[in-house]
Amino acid sequence: MEPTIFDLILRKEIPADIVYEDEHVLGFKDVNPQAPVHVLFIPKVRIATHNDLDESNMDYIKHIHAAINHYAKEIGEADNGYRIVMNCNENGQQSVFHIHMHFLAGRQLEWPPG
Image (cartoon, rainbow, N blue to C red; front, side, top):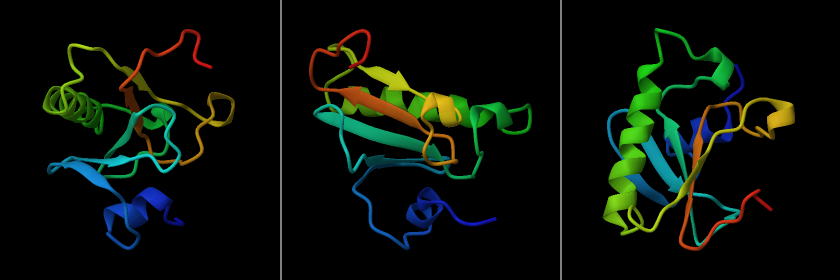
């Protein structure tokens, strides 16, 4: 399987502005931020899409949410509020086929997103 850009970031073969890391999750700043704070949280194993989650890998979602909670508190955005987005497949605008959650914060976010 061809490595994704996230695989290369995980292997430290290309640079990323890493803001969070533990044994299960890596968080790094998005190179095309859509908010003052825009961080991508990824599992340290490749799961291509949300559709590929099952009992064998579902705990990675729990670990990502725990990482986001920790990070939001650490940077002082937990009480202000934030948005978490996960895209799935082409119509869902997924561009990298390694599941990831977008953490967006730092300003009043619009609804619907624009």
